[in-house]
Length: 213
Image 1 (cartoon, rainbow, N blue to C red):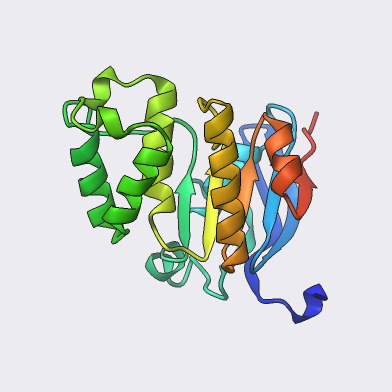
Image 2: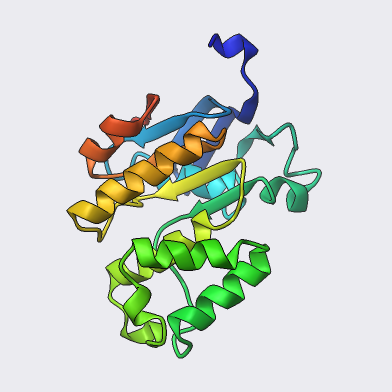
């Protein structure tokens, strides 16, 4: 399909951000379209995580415009965020609560499908750890719990930062199939990963960020 006829889910125009005297992103523009997987590539320090944080409103750019399904977050942040489900950097949970209680709480806050999240816990080999307190989880287990909650929300746009981290070979294969299924249902996914092989299998295109010296 010609991209001219496709629905634009995310528009980034002239995004620039600096921290002190260091420019991290300089006049970046990018369009994401309905029903595609775009891999976000770049070495450490190239601004991948910063860009993801800008998209979900955790960091404000110095300049530039963002539209999510045609919605400007500056004008209607709540409605814009409803269009996105994101997994970015290290997950934060209530440490003394069980995985199941954390899942129930966060899916309720996001109005996500708790049944779907439970199914994803099974897929990510966490079903035997539902009653365990999250403070006893490894980093890999935390990321899988975070991913289950993220993907349980029916969002037009998913932002996934290192989703394959902490997964064994079968987990990677199952997640690949899940992400492709979401794409085939019309969802859009922006994914960063140090594991290039899974992304090469499932991506429709890639966007490379260059570290600014």
